[in-house]
Image 1 (tube, rainbow, N blue to C red):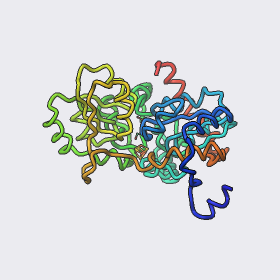
Image 2: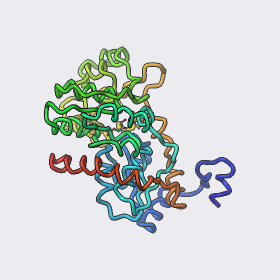
Image 3: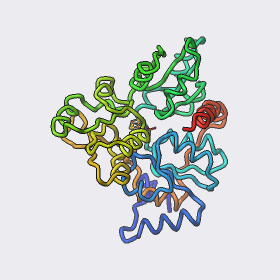
Length: 329
Ligand code: 13P
Ligand code: SF4
């Protein structure tokens, strides 16, 4: 019984090692009309079993159109919240509810609301990596795939607030010539990439293209041959003539890159303060195959969003989806 192992302090039931987890997950997802969505930062085995793997925008788009009864969001909490806001009548599960996001946490809703109130003449653009309560005081949500185009959809003289990622905000300011007011937030994973370590790798692989996620610091983005969302970096790697790629984003994306380009060489950029070769998001990696199996078995844990908050938060999310559809994104 779920209650028993919860009382013992487990976040998920210990799973019998002899179980064929993949077969069980396949059986349960069919029986329960569930769809498994996975972000590119999930472990290889979760990406392998997911019905759909994508970036934050694609996961929201997929959630909005699925007719499944249950959505299992193998990603972090804000991704589950976005799916729940878009599909209030569906059950949205996340294998480990503790899968948060340091970037979303760097923007507490009450402080962000004060910031917004202090600038009543500004329109508010929020990155999807935010809580539902932050989205509720936002005019339009963006992801790293559509941020540039959505910012440019505002008149040039419109005053804009952009939160919470200052690195993405600075990058978008630099490529659009805007001067958006930025919230001072960041992602603990992407902030760890170092110029020095990337340059060391570049000495070993002089012909490599450097791929950088815009959540990285500006000095790292300046080294890049391509700055883009996870989906954008993958697309670039597939289309490129290069053989070697140094990848400065969470190393889960390498699974999809290697799958799509088995003849190319993808080298993860390491974090600055460690001897590890790759940089992983500890929140994303809380989801495991065992927890995914339990989530399907117990239809738990469920993502819940306060109805009044959801009613406000759905508007900027829908606006993002509408603009993205118009742009063919
Ligand atoms: P993408 O939208 O590029 O997949 O990024 C999500 C994210 O959390 C990056 O850290
Ligand atoms: Fe959040 Fe950073 Fe993890 Fe992405 S990599 S989910 S921004 S903590």
